[in-house]
Image 1 (cartoon, rainbow, N blue to C red):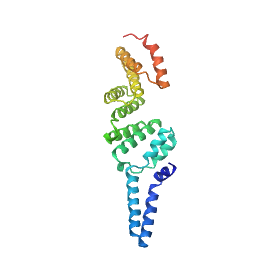
Image 2: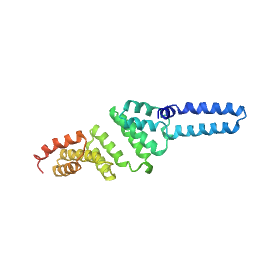
Image 3: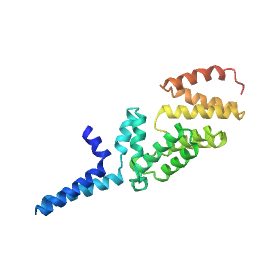
Image 4: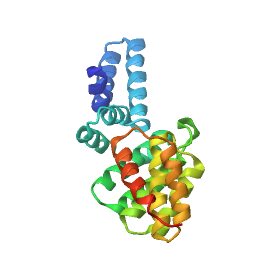
Length: 217
């Protein structure tokens, strides 16, 4: 695994070494072996442009090692040459990083690039993209736009109960702000019925439950 990570990080240098070795072997009249080296170099070059470092980026994210994930992400210099599903994931992660850094304009631009690059190979991620747009709109204070995006996220589908519950809770709060208490209660009920596992959502539901019992409408 360590060698694979090393290879992915320094794939371009491997290409150079393979080409030089192939030339030297060709000079020594080992043409078949030289061709094998050239083929290996060509495949490595294709992988460099088409996959980048996304494999180890995703591994770092799964290990909650965001510092290394950001470093590995920065190694991708030509994102437009990535395969479509890989490119979509790249821009999604770029958007997440920008959102953490409160760069909302870049976060929105990157998530839209991710949506433009979507591929059926990774399944339908459009719901998550709209959820990201909704979160960005909330951070920017555009509640009307955020409400629209949350509804779109639920319409296209979210992958798990945690994300669904989060979307319904946000919609509940937005409806109550609009004076639509009845709809707010309906969305809150949907979030509660999903029984999310994360502590943050459970605490939020517990707090809102007390408020809902006193809410008219």
